[in-house]
Length: 311
Image (tube, rainbow, N blue to C red):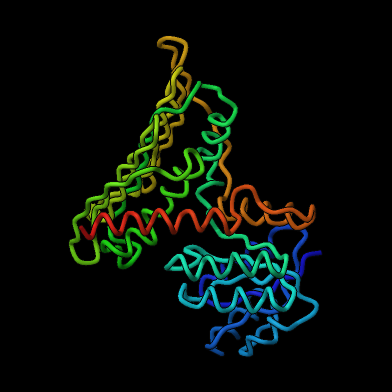
């Protein structure tokens, strides 16, 4: 049984619901600052709560500290958790800058503890299927990537900076998993005050990637997400619309004009991340998808994008 302490009673409640649902976990405490909110969470989910963060950090019975605090606090408490012998699961972005993320990585190495970062797009069923197909060479060498997500202003502030940090970054994680770090990045964006459009072009030695994140759709529009992977022997494509008229299509085109529409089993991305962490901890191994090193690459790419936007 993996015993978990959760830091943060906002999104931490969503994490708590997942741990309660998935076999192999036991929540010891959830920490928060608002006692009324904690009381509601404790009664609703039958979880012990605390306003003392050290009752989780120093608790010898806790194996995994799940950090759902504001991003600027991630580095401090991830390192404290590892100093006290705990593995860490951290919400994304793991940090706002490279130095803080690198400090977490160094602590992971020093204290020999895993840091899992919630790069959940890699566990989205169509994205994971496409990643596996590329790695297995189903359509030949990867030549180009086009990835996008679009939304109306339903997620709060997604102006230019927040777009890059909290929306564009998910597409970045997907592209990095497929192609690695680019040689060069050119980005452009338009800020509409809480809404924005960001487009990034990534150049590799023999491939390219284009990422578009649009948070400026009219309020009547649904959420859209998708990608197209151009390969030497075919194309892998996913397009989805979520809203009143939900639609998903995952298709592979190869062998001439043959177009095969594939059914991809629907799974909860976050639930799959938690199950992946369970497998890694039970096997005593680092994650091949959501280790702190992968998150650091995402931060490096984000800084390249921000530098290009600021030119």
